[in-house]
Figure 1 (cartoon, rainbow, N blue to C red):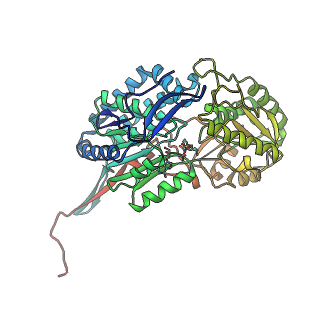
Figure 2: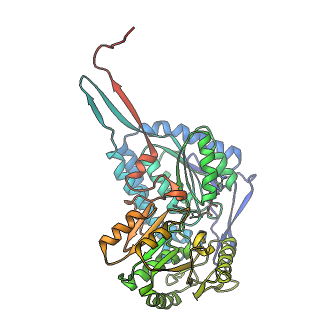
Figure 3: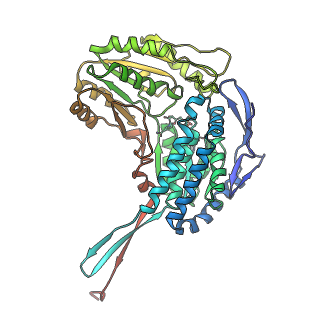
Length: 484
Ligand code: NAD
C-alpha cells in the first residue's frame, strides 16, 4: 500500500521537494504500515510559499468575481469526477471507512467550492446617502491568508478554508496536519488544473513550528485554524501580535438532549451518528448524551443493540462502517479515557476494548451509562468512539448542566414538542445547533463555536465577514467647510 505524493509541498503552481526538512511518516491507521514520507517545510519553502502567495494575490484580488467563480466551479467538477480515487486516498491518510469518505469528505469540499463560487459575484457594498455627500463601501479581500488543518477531515478542512478565501479574492497558504498531509496536495493540483493562477493556493508540510512560522509572518493578514483549544490559544496569541484576523474552529464537548417524548429510534440513530461517525473523531460530536429518565432504559437497550451491530474492519471494504482511529497515539489516549471512565464509576454498556488486536488502531464503539457531570468523561474531549449517557429529569436542570462547560461548539435537542425545542436551543451556549437531527453540516449553514470552542464562522454567508474587510469611502460633492 503506497501513497507517496509527487513531492512534499505544492508551491507557486508546482510540486516542490526539499529533503533537508525533518521527515514525517504517513501511517495507514488500519495496518500501521508507512505508506508515504513527506518532509517538513524549510524556511526557504515557507518563504517561497508566502512570497508567491502575496505576489499572486494582487492581481487575483482585482479579478472579476465571476471569473474567479468559474475556476472554482471547474475545480468542484474535477473533484466530483475523481471522487473515487480521492476518497481512497483520504481513507489511506485517515483510516476512515471508504463508505464515509465517498460521501462526506471530498463531496463536501466540492460543495464548498461550488457554493462560494456562486456567492462571490453577489458580494457587494452599500451606498449611504448623506444629502449632498454620500458614502459607499467596498468589500475587499484581506490579502494573504494562512490555513492550518486538523487530521480528522483533512481534505474537507482544506476546501472549507480555500473556497471562501479564493472566491473572495485572497491567497492562501495551507498547512495540513502532520498526521494527514496527503489530501491538501491533491486540492492544490486540482485548482491549478482548473485554471487557478500559480501561488494562490500553496501547501506546505510541517508540525507546529511550521504553523507558527506561517502565523507570525508580517505579510499574513488572516489565520484560519482548525484544531484543539490549547493550539487555538497559542495561534490566536501569535496572530494578535500582528493584529491579524482569525477564524478559530476548536474542540467541543457538546450536549445532545433527548426528551422522553422523542422518537427513540431517531434519537438513538442521531446519538450514534454524533459519536461513532469517523470513529468519533468529529469536533461537533454530541459526546454528552442527556437522556430524560422516562425513556432511559428503552434508549439504552436499543442503543446497545444497534451499537453491537456496527461493522468494524478493513476501511477499504465498502461494507465496513467503522475504521480505526487515526494514530496509535490517539488510540492510546482514547483507551486511557475508557479506563478512567471505568475507574470513576461509569457503567459500561457496550464496547470498551481494543478491536481487531494487532491490526491497526481500532477501538470498539463504546457506550457508558450513569455518567455524572463531574466525571472526566463528561468534561474532556475524547475524540474517539466513546459515548457518555447522562440522566436528567427537568428542562431547566438539563439546560444548566449542558451549559456547564468551557466549550460551546455544538448542541442538539430531540423532542416532539417544537416550542420546547426552540426554547431549549435558545438557552444553549453553542454556535451550531440541531433540532431532531445531529451533525449535519451543509455548506449553506454557518459552522463554528461559542465560548472556548472558537471565534468566527466557516460556511454560509457568515464566511464573507471572515475573508473580506470593508473599505468606507466618503465622497464630498461640494465645497469643503473648514473653520480656519
Ligand atoms: P491540534 O491542535 O493538535 O493541531 C491542529 C493543527 O495545528 C495541526 O496542523 C498542527 O500541526 C498545528 N499546530 C500545532 N501547534 C501549532 C502552533 N504552535 N502554531 C501553529 N500551528 C500549530 O489538533 P488535532 O489533534 O490535529 O485535531 C483535533 C482537534 O481539532 C480536536 O480538538 C477537534 O475538536 C478539533 N477540530 C475542530 C473542528 C472545528 O471545526 N471546530 C474540526 C475538526 C477538528
